[in-house]
Image (cartoon, rainbow, N blue to C red; front, side, top):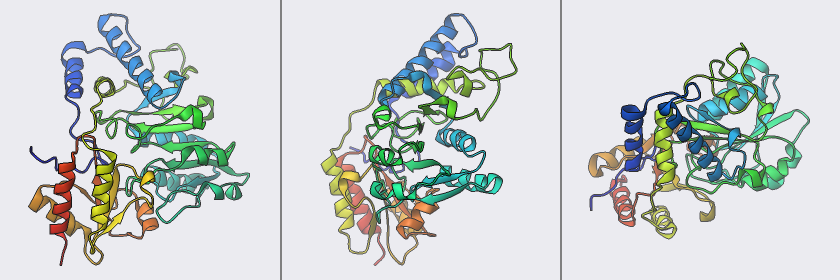
Length: 375
């Protein structure tokens, strides 16, 4: 069997289930039509698909109120929707030490515009938040906490339920870009206030479609204003959700593809134990350092590695040139995470695993890394 050498799934998943492309082509070639604006057969097909996708996503994340799940182009847009609304008057934010630039760059902009500030939550050496130290950090001006559920650098999974319990009434925004689709979520049980997600990573859908779940939609204002197909007699955005946050034409082709991915998820071709073996054997290489969770129970499907004293780009290039293995080298749009883990500013070689990888693919990767290390 040909090796699956694509290990850049933390950037975007590949391959996609065949049904994804088929569904997109069906919409483009056979359906057409828009959402929420017309009353004919094609439009009804679109409406059913959009609402079914919304329902399945809500069910998958453990949310009962599907209408509070709004579509967005990506998780970055969804994160900005919350941050730029909640922090419009400034305030203080608590964040994990593993946040992506999708969080830190908006916070930097809001600090400059409105005087917003942010502080790091207490954490272990691998960046996993220590919930026991949260309460002592809470102040009257703490407006929000932001948590990257699974790091896109070392794959550490954060204890969302415990974190929210310690935060109390402070709202929690979860960036589930890496986790949604591979790690179970229960937003209602955990009382998560906001959850941003994308469809093109662990959900195995196409790019350009993501969304945001809002426990209380009244806590935020729209980021984009425009037509919704509802309340068209008013210059104001409609009050009803999700319309209030879905201005303009949705990425309907992307929604068709995402629904196909949700309806026909593949079965994993490797076991959790085989994945653990991959990490442990790489950690056993004497000249390699692996960025991963301290405890495997906290490990997601992403980790990184580097050879001390060597540019990680060299290792990444050798893996591709000599073995065809595709990885992501550098800071992974997460300089804060690399500062936390001691790999800033050079970064590391990131390995993103998918359900399509087999134990044989892992064995091939281990050999490739071993043979690519500098003497």
